[in-house]
Length: 379
Image (cartoon, rainbow, N blue to C red; front, side, top):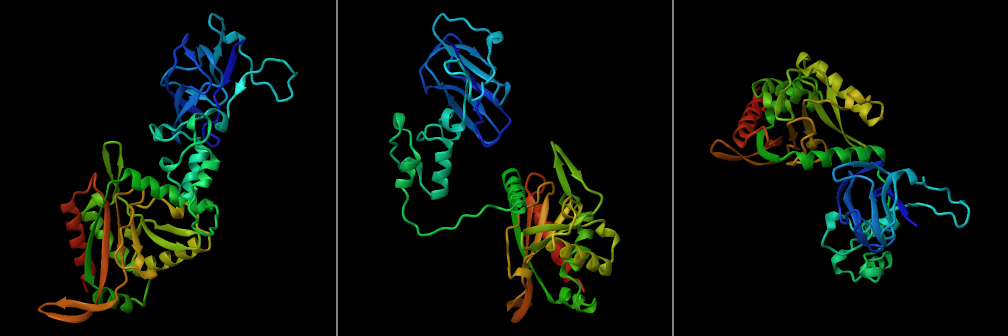
């Protein structure tokens, strides 16, 4: 009797997968647990083995086609047996009458074998690979005791070197979002970071004269004119186009109990220092109290990160996705500096600018840094 095999959930609640290629053509023979088809999800590329041995009678989709989870993937039967889609049976409930032929609905543990991202490496189920990652076990060093040499959970656990007690906790939704955004930026944006320093005295004196507003307010006031001069720093990429923003919505990093967030000052070019200071204070408080709206935490055209506020000096800030640059300013500690021909005790702000190298060349990056130093050093 023909066995119908429905596409299993090959990765944590996915809805569909793309067929990459079939290892066996219709009419060809396959043995139980032999790789039958290669599929791709948004998580990985997976080989799915045949649940039974026999002759492949039907392929549920061709290479490049998308198939929904629990849709008919394949039919395996006996040589010479006929089968047509009209004869297909939907998955039966668990309490079906004894002896009634039922299709097979795969599961991740029952049906998947080797992720193609590990092709050529040791054979292990995805859950075993996840366990190995969690425990710090390199699978290439493990001898599998499962069927066909497959590595089992027990094999992985027995290979663990005693590293002492650990504590495991789940990421909060906010931390997961932060992680996703940063990972996407790091994957897709070729980062370059350039460094500089500037005498802190003029900016600190200006801050004192203005009644000690947040440093971010003064930075925004002095950086916005530079973004007009260097519009590629206030831009984004869309396909093969560079979109230079003619508005100035400046983001600034806020350290909150839930992680680093970026609050956005809208139309910063239309504000003076007092208005900027009030808006920076309001947004920072809202972000820390978890009262900021979604619109107040996204859509910046350029970003400032005051890492000096948490004791940092130089950094390698990650460019927020959808922008082309970010500047960080570090802590201006007293230290020996050169002033003219003399070495004196002074304070300098360490500056780091990261930018998207697809649209900003090194020379332009250094030119922006020089302009920023001049702007911050101005009385």
